[in-house]
Length: 331
Image 1 (tube, rainbow, N blue to C red):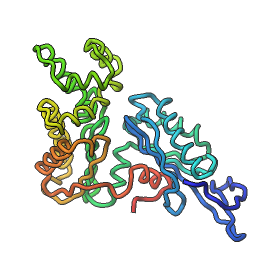
Image 2 (cartoon, one colour; image 1 turned 30 degrees about the horizontal axis):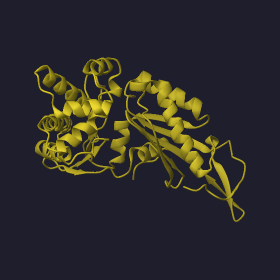
Image 3 (tube, rainbow, N blue to C red; image 1 turned 180 degrees about the vertical axis):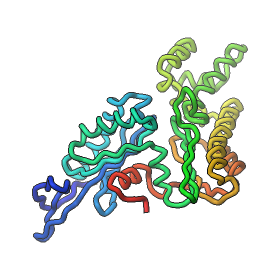
Image 4 (cartoon, rainbow, N blue to C red; image 1 turned 180 degrees about the horizontal axis):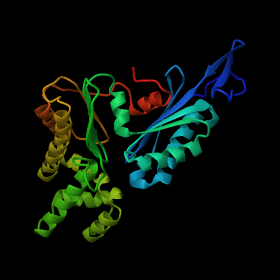
């Protein structure tokens, strides 16, 4: 995206806006950054006061509970700097920052991220919310459930009365059922079990090739010491194998689809939405990677919430985070 052109007047530090002159008349413009960060990637949008997206950029993961606050902030800064470069703006032009980040449900982690981002964007109003909260805002008004299908997994919903419920999303050690992490873990377990039983399955060989490793002992050691670098990257292998008809891969994905549907059913029960009509939005990096998995997920979801309309979010979670940060909404 080309840099914004026009003649700039000095920034008004009193109200935190950049003043721009068009035809001799000053116009005060406020700019907001919105982020959607998870275990695989970070999306950033830069919006103006008219809610127009001027830039959209991407960087690596920014879930602080998985990679630490310092690494998460580094990814956010990388995204922001790309967006600012694309629009020709300086950081001082940013009046508000909204960050919808996985791994920030706990108050202490949210506070740590807020402090770190305040140091990066001095003078800007900082709002940190979870990726689930940002996604639910992005779904628009009315009853809705968002199911996250990415490195991690979760379901988060709202009914007509505004009541909120959540299932999953508490990290790889206690939840993340049906996620890329969980699928990768199951795939390695199946390959190792098959090898112990004397069978050298095709899926196992493909996993070794994906990990660029020839020794299962090394894979098992790396899985114990650096699981985030081992399990999620295996998902594309399982997805491709399932589409090719591999029975082991298909079995793993069928179970994953059922687990995701159980998360949605849990939220729907608590919000009394089981038999209601509502938007059910799927988000996450495992969507669209396997025709077999997509079909299994949709079938499992329709079974537990038959009245739901399976669709997409109205806007991106990054845009929703930006609107929340500047005190707006997702209208």
